[in-house]
Amino acid sequence: MSFWDSIKPAPPPPSVTGVQLSSDKRVVELAWSDGKTTRISARTLRQVCPCAACVDEWTQKLRFDPARVPESTTVQKISPVGNYALAFAFSDSHDSGIFTFELLRSASEKHPA
Image (tube, rainbow, N blue to C red; front, side, top):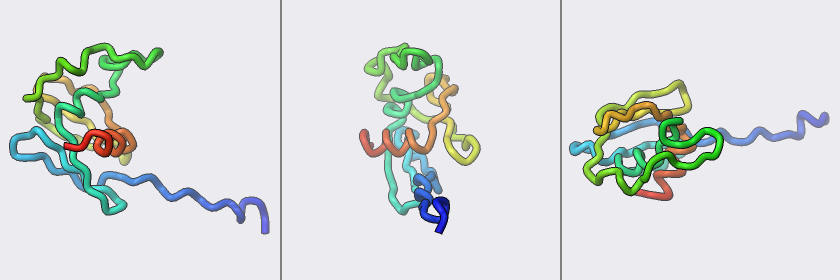
């Protein structure tokens, strides 16, 4: 048996298999490839936006105060980004963040709606 035969591939990380937006557009429900379902609020998504306008690329410090994101924040549009992420357009017109499945899983488990 060679070295390469002894290496076991890691299971792929969970991916989003379904997305539902609540009727008031304030909660996103995510179905995952491992059978789990998570929910996250639009406000929380906006607060954890990873884009360069929200997070300094070098220092990773936030460029805005997350507490100032209104409770009334909604998701206006959800778009897939390749096979690894989703993009959201928010009610404050912000739409530049790319939310990887890893980020979505972590945020939705840490801050469930």
